Each structure stands twice: as structure tokens, then as C-alpha cells.
Image (cartoon, rainbow, N blue to C red; front, side):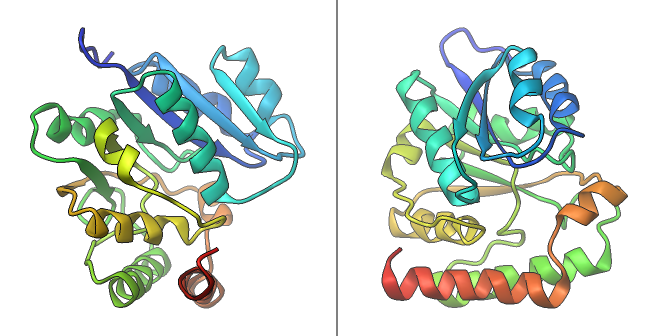
Length: 230
């Protein structure tokens, strides 16, 4: 368990139709963090029921609104509950809970405002298709927002409260990961990347983006968001 007598650490887990993995993900998080918020983003399966049975804080959207909307809901609730450090953690089982301390430590030591776990520099044998998508997404994030991050779409992040209070998100879908990078640059926040391991199974890979469609979708969503400030 990651403990700090003076700081409250929350994990925000956006989830959509993750009944196969959400229970396992919550149990993994509980080994390190006691305050967990699951945002059930309009799931049609038993995601909400399983999360509720696990005893976490559960908030549900009536409809599937997208990753960006789910993160905003989770962030707002974590801040309302007095969180000092807020983590994000994917619900599909691709992140290793053992990496949590590694991601939080730079904030605890005062070395960063935001920490992003990069799968490209860690262990886990990231498939070539994912490496290509990650590189293209990071490239276009740099083009649109002017800041290079090796794994801009990573779902394992940590935010200091004061940093998250400055970050204003408007994206609804997957483009939110790139928007976060833009907000980090806009507010001149100190960002640190740390290597994390990725867990790649047939299930997690099936939930991911395809090389062409995934890359185009992210770029398109970022472009629309930038042009119309959605």
C-alpha cells in the first residue's frame, strides 16, 4: 500500500464494457491505493455491478460519452473529495499496478507536477502495431500542441492537485490524451516521463486501436477539437 499520512491519493478508472477485467483491475489497485473512483461510461454489461461489489466509489454516465468525458467526471469528483494526487488507470488490464509507486514518486519528491508512464521505454514487449500508433499519436500531438511526449496516449498518469486544477479539458473522446499534453504546455507544468511495463493480451489488444483507423481517428478528433474548441 502506498501510504502518506499527509496526502490523499486517488485513482480514477474510466470504464466502458469492461466486465471481464474491471474486478481484477480494482483488486490490483487496492494493493497500493485505498481511494478508487470508477467512472462507468454508459456500459451495457456488468461493469458497474462488479465495481460496486468491489466497494469503490462508483459514478455512472447514462450513455457512453467517451474517454474525455469520463476523465473529467472522475477528476472533478476526486478534487471534490480532497485528493492531493490523482492517478488515471485504464480498465482493460494493460497497466501493471506495480508501476503505481514509480509514477507517483516524482510528485511525492517535488520533482514534477504531472507524470506520464511511457510504455515505449519499459518492459512488456509492446506489439509493433501499438508502437506505430503510439508514435503517430505522439507526432500529431507535437504538431498540434508543440510538446513532445514519447507515449502521449498512455493511460497511466499522475497529477498533483494544483496542476490538475489548472488543466481545463473539453475533449469528449480519445483526443483527451493529446489535449492533456497541450494543457501541460499551456500552463508550463513540470512533466516527467517514467518507464512502465505494458500487459498485452488478446483481450487488451482487441480493445485497442488499429494502425490506420486508430491513428486517423485520434488525429481527426484532435483537429476537430482544436478547430471548434469542442
